[in-house]
Amino acid sequence: MYRRYPYPGKRRWKRRRRKSLMDILFTVSTAAAGILSVLAVLLAVRPEFPGIDRLIGNSMVSEGATGEKGGNDGSMVYPVPLAGDVLQIVTGYLYQAGNPGSVLKPDITQAVPGVPSVPAPLSASGNTDTPDTLSTPDGSATLDSSITPDTPSVPDDVLPQKVMYLTFDDGPSEENTNAVLDVLKNRNIKATFFVVGENVLKHPETAQRIVAEGHTIGIHCYRHDYEALYESVDSYLEDFDKAYRAVLEVTGEKARLYRFPGGSINSHNREVYSDIIAAMDARGFIYFDWNASLDDALRKSSPEELLDNAKKTMMGRRKVVLLGHDIVHSTSLCLDQLISQFPEYRMEPLTPEVEPVRFRP
Image (cartoon, rainbow, N blue to C red; front, side):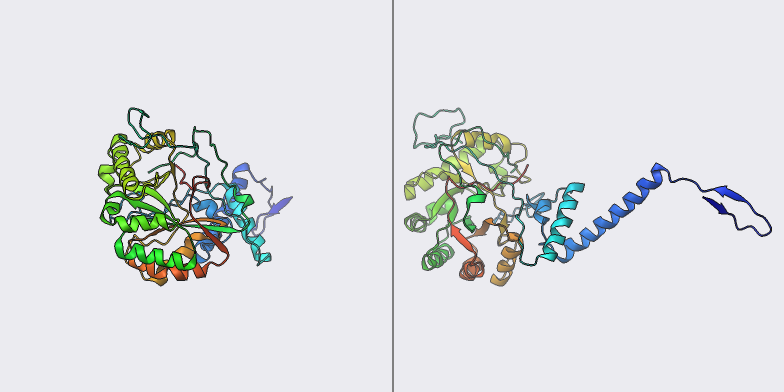
């Protein structure tokens, strides 16, 4: 092809320049930027569209109820999406647009830890002489465990319906925890309580009621002090030892499950979390994070706000580990309505056989 230059009185012709590789790359990058802009708008307008938990599947909803927040506490983690992720999300969104009743399976980070039949005692030196005694031994989490499980976990694809695990941290408290237990008893639902050792000793009757009514009791910590707790591996093991002893003495339960204060990945334990997890895994203890939250520890919220937080962070997942705090008054007030709001979910307690939900490192 030739193109005529528009000079009056002259007829000059010149061969049209072929598009170079740089021209093509510029065109492609411009189109990609446009697609990403559209995606950004979709994220802002409709955050629950299919594939979104590919981007925020390892989000960390703040858990600490002590007001000690910083770094990753209270924040959400958004990995940078690759081209394949973008294509998957856009395709999923278009698919759902054409199929209003469809629900795409979320991508949830989970791992199956090792589960020996009897947990060994915690000891910094590795001593395992006395099974009922712990001498010493929220974080970033590793996904794999070196322990071979004795009991099979329950894969997501064999669950007959959606399942929700209600979990409560930082208790027990006399008034609010008992109010939570009253609702659970009336609805015939079992839940999981990750308790603080100090509070167990302050309210032993409430801790005993948790166990007596068939709920799972797990270890959170003895004292909710991030700096002291995560100062070293030994400091964590020592705190866990005290909490384990408190639960054992008050309730008679040998707790198998635990949850890191602040979650397994937080700004306070980045230097020690992997060594802590290795020590705990070696002794048969299993930790759980969460993939949805009431956000009841961040600020004072109304029961309606907590219900809205739960719905937004659940994002229609088929398997939900919901974080709440039984020491928060609004949580006890909204619990009955929360259960009624999600009739499609079967409510179950966590057990060593449940496949854990864990944050990505």
